[in-house]
Length: 396
Image 1 (tube, rainbow, N blue to C red):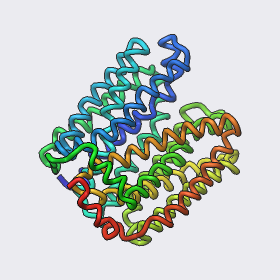
Image 2 (tube, rainbow, N blue to C red; image 1 turned 135 degrees about the vertical axis):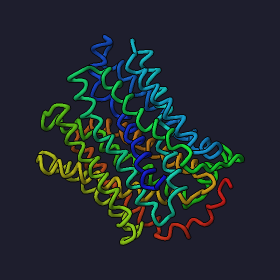
Image 3 (cartoon, rainbow, N blue to C red; image 1 turned 60 degrees about the vertical axis):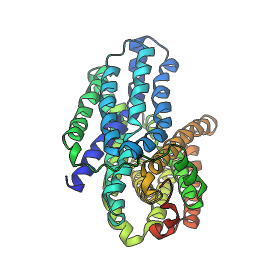
């Protein structure tokens, strides 16, 4: 199976998972009304998904190292598909929350294990472009999730949203099964669960990277989480139009992902990382000061997408070199820091909005991204492979 086809296959899996990750938000009022529960209680469905999704990020990496990456991701996609289908059949808040928790558990494997598999397949010279393309396709799903969910819920029902996602997830699942034997399968039967994480965090070079990923998740995803609310409050658009605008983030991620491989060869990882963080900084500051101008707001959403993909693909490529025999663990820790940072940034952002307003959130996070850029410029060097030779024996 050609390497480009592997990226398409993994990207399609990531697209479905990331779309599912955000799909409940626009249909939460419909679920609340149909199940006859308060919106505050219905919010349990978001937590029921996000908590296991975050925790199990660090579980699947060591499992993939020990038993094989293609084995783990195929198994997880089968159960993810079944759990998503069960969500369409939920009759009450409790069983629906259980189904969402199961969905979150098995969705947690897709991003870190896919990235580890990409690290196994692609040499370092081609890896950033491959990772950028994969992440761009995946986050296009996130960008489209609101418009997909809102539109289906409007014309059909909230059950139709989960039904559609279950049907769509069958496609990458069947393709994984179809091309299973053509995918590489590196196993390390001696791989441990805790030791790789201890060694990765004990090394200053990898620790700095994980801290930057945490900050990136907090301030970029923390900003993105409230763009829909900002558009609704400022322009009073419906979910369909909000989703269309937020799709700009996903489209920019796809385009930027395709560009990142060439840009990293021209600029080097350090400058591309800086460029990404500066784009994200400018996006937030534009929303803070010019968000009431429609054109500026749409441009800022797209600019945030470019900032995200240039930043994240660079940090991910760096992390793939940390522990070649425990690459699943290395990428799981990246995913955990990124999602944990996103959750933390979203929670803190809610407090900032409640006290100071939406515009101040983008101002604060824009300045925080500027500080993150200064830290990255001080801590990250261009020669990733040579810089991390001491990490090659982690969990070997």
